[in-house]
Length: 124
Image (cartoon, rainbow, N blue to C red; front, top):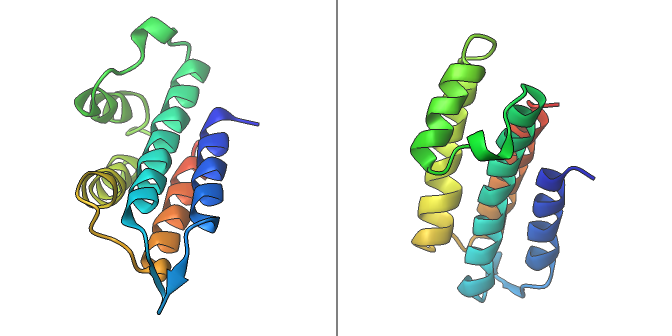
């Protein structure tokens, strides 16, 4: 299994163990972990695609700015929407979901994971 899909599967497994009450997850800590793991899945998908383009492990991005640059440099000619989608998912998964813990609604969380999967699938 690709590492990116493994991370996403781990996020879904964590999510499945969190109690839901009135369509909200009752414990925000594991929800934040889900968002963080899903964000790492995005980065792994980009890493895997960069490996396919011939980059070495040493050449992989080391910051969010590096990932933005890599998307522009290596993927923008084929799909300029990819960088914009990354920005939306960065804001949703990393900033709002993981860092600030703003989401507990089950529908919103599951939609965010679905969007992450769609992003990952664009690299296949």
